[in-house]
Image (cartoon, rainbow, N blue to C red; front, side, top):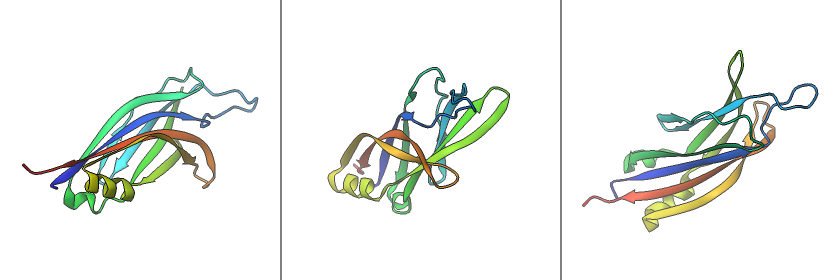
Length: 142
């Protein structure tokens, strides 16, 4: 094996919306910064009109085998943008990659259907979930 490709499907999120004092949702768009090692991606902004915050976006991380050995996790930082305000931190999710990479290397391919992961706030409490799917494909030298 010379390396591998990790495809990440960022699906949607639920229960992370901010509310005002009256309990009404604040009109907000959300985006996600996905970090893996030294590489990062920024998702498109979600629509603030839906009950569910949706992205349905795929990201690809390709690394040589030597890098995959040192990559332990993916970090998903959820950010919001409101009218007249800069981006604000909403919460984050960290997904450990050990099992995904190990199984993918052994089998040559592994796919995990989108599943919900808890969103951790700055105060280490949980609020809402983000749904993410994964596919790891081993690259062999020909």
